[in-house]
Amino acid sequence: MTSTPGFPALTVSNCALLSQRGGVRLERGCWQGRDVFVKTLDTADPDIRQRFEHEGEVARRLSHPGIVPLLTRSSERLVFPWVAGCSLRERLEHGPLSPYAALEVTLGVLAAMQAFHEAGVVHHDLKPENVMLLGGRSCAGCVRVTDFGMAHDRTLSSDLHQGTRMGTPQFMPPEQFQGVRGDPRSDVYAVGALLFDCLAGEPPHPDALGWLVGLSSVRLPLPGPAALHPLLESALERDPQRRPPSARALLRALEEVRRRLPPEPPAIPGTVPA
Image (cartoon, rainbow, N blue to C red; front, side):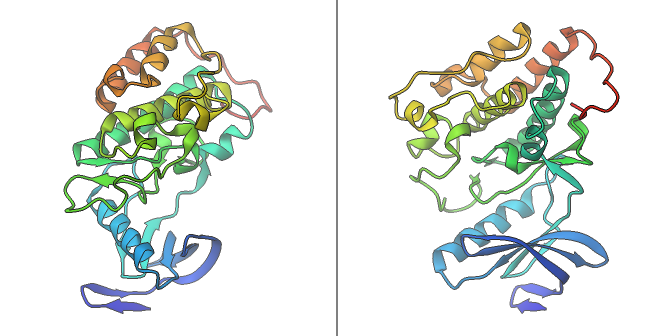
């Protein structure tokens, strides 16, 4: 049980350790009769504690069906519902998605990102590992975006990550690598890289760090239907001014492309669903 001034007593039972990183334990447990995912602070390091508290502050303000919600918290724990399914990364280990499934997943992510941005939050670490698929299904309504540890929230008085290069190079735009924070178009770039990964089975730049610092211009051929290529090109622009201005704008453009695509062929029995 954890009880701290400002927080109610919090009891999580049957905790099973999943992994541990950066002074935080990731666990599965039970809270008030439901399966939960728990982040538990396991260090006295003041910088890590500050980042942990920052994530809790960001998470408590977000509310959307496509965002894993914060159920409760204490000074040492953040409690989220357990998402029964798999991550998008786990799904992609079986191979790329079909164009229709890739669009469905991306539309689900963009709907969540629209809610982020309308709340004044930029995720800054969108990648397949942080996208959960409820039931392992590749549909827009099954997408659940998680992990707010690197998020920028314009409503908070300070940004703990300002000027840092935190993020995942394969899904990070150049301006974020240079320390620029809080621009929703950084998430637009990450969504473009995520869609590319869904279609190709790998991110767009083989040498991501080289591309970020301007030493490499190599990008894999654009995957998927030709109708998607202009949107992929624009989302992956090095210059944020040339990208779609918002998650909402990219969402609407992708919905229009989806309407023009031919129907999805039926799945072959015995194969991994797209």
